[in-house]
Image 1 (cartoon, rainbow, N blue to C red):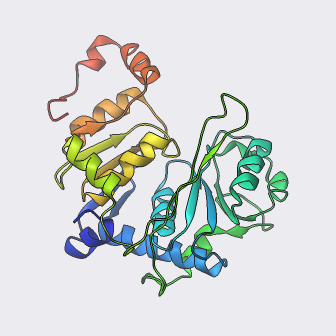
Image 2 (image 1 turned 30 degrees about the vertical axis):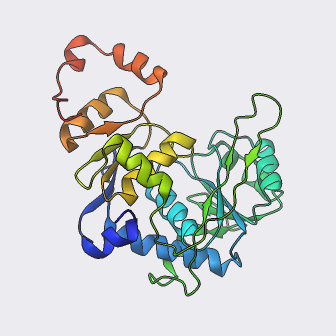
Length: 275
C-alpha cells in the first residue's frame, strides 16, 4: 500500500509511532486525523500548492503531523534544525521563501521569541509563552480531521549544512499524481531494507536531519511502527529495542561512543535479538 493514509483506513488502531521516554503513542487512525488537521491549518494560513512551510519542531508527535500535512496539500516543507540561531533560521526561511514557520519549545530560536517576529514569515509556535504568535496546537485543534478538498503531493526542501558557505536548498519539482500514490523513494527504501508492516524502526536522532526524516517516512508509509527518542539516551534506546522488538534503527558514531561508555552490565542487560 505504501501510504500512511491507506494503513490508517485498513488498521486505524495499530500503533504508528511511540515517543520515548514519555511513552506518548499515536495510532495510524489518530495520525491520519492529525495530518488532515495540520493540512487544513496550513490551508487556513493561506498556503497553496507550491508554497513553502518551515518546520522547526523537536522530536514530538506534532513534527509527524506537520510533515504529513504538508505532503498532502502540495507544499514544500523545509526541515529547520532546532539548533539554529534566529539569524541562521532567518536566512533559510528567507532563502526558501517559506510563508509560514512552525517553531516549538526546545528550539534555540525559541529562547528569544521577540526575534522571531523579524523572520519575514507567519510564525506559529508550540508551547512557547506569549500571544504575539499563532498557537499552532490551537489552530490545528480547531480544524476538521477530514482531507482538504484540494489534495496534491508535496515534498521536502532539504538544505545542506552550510559547511562551504551558506546552507544551500535542494529544490526539486513537486511530484504529480494522487496525494496517496506510492512514493518511489519510500518504496525503494522499504524494499532495500526489508520494511514491512511488522517492522519496528527506532529513530534516536533528531527528525529534522535528512536521513532520520527519510526513514521516518519509509516507516510510516510502509505501515510499520516508529519509535522516536525525544532526546537521545543510550540506555533508554537499548531498553526500547527490547520493549518494542525493534528491527531497524539509524545511528551516528557519537551515539555508539556514548553507548560504549555505559557499564558492561548495563550494556548486556537487554535482549536485542530482534534487531
